[in-house]
Length: 348
Image (tube, rainbow, N blue to C red; front, side):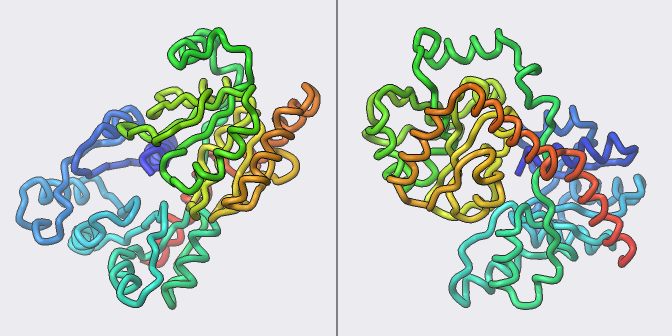
């Protein structure tokens, strides 16, 4: 979510627009500043929106800078953001980066209160379908704008040898000739690890790198030849180290960013069909789509990926990069989002 907000800000500023980012703080603000945003503090609790000087400063800045709309990323503190937007008489565009389980009536009613956008932007067709299914009348307000990636930064040529070597040394891979399997976000779905175990035990000649989230703890009882990494600041270099990237969660996901970044780097991928998985690769050309939770299919796909000869691997890498360039480039995503902005402003 943070990366997409940063890319949105960068696109607005590069296009000659003004981006004012109001937030409660955090490490992402440094990146927002580098992208050209004007940063302001914000207290999002609805009850405090008009009782805090910092929020009145936001309203004054909105008026003086001629801001035309509010873009809310996610659903956290949506009521407070909506109150601020209403006070400034501005429409709200809301990006949905995920969809909470809204299976019961009371869950749907509670979630609906946080869908405050005049227009809802879904990061995948899967998310859009969930909104249309669970919230009557909201489907027509949803636009699908998939994530966009900087293809200049995600390329073998851009990732220098020193960057790759430094990461390999950090992970203890520099002396290991075995293939490296990169498995992002492995600890976010414990049932996925059970499926992965079958593939891991089937290929003892492979070094597995499990990349978790920052500040997370390693899963218990990891098999041998599995390296646990609590996040990385250089994902592009990590992708360059990989022979194949696996993003095969058992639970539905709103998007598979790691699989898309891997394809941009020319790496074959294995993706499960949970959630937006099928939208995240050119199945059969840039990688393998496997049934969620099917350890046998996952192990077979891993074996086929590691059995590719150099020519097959190169062709699959080219297909993956072409797929991302055609559907998930930063320029394409930014143009689609600007189209949503224009529609909202015409109707305001």
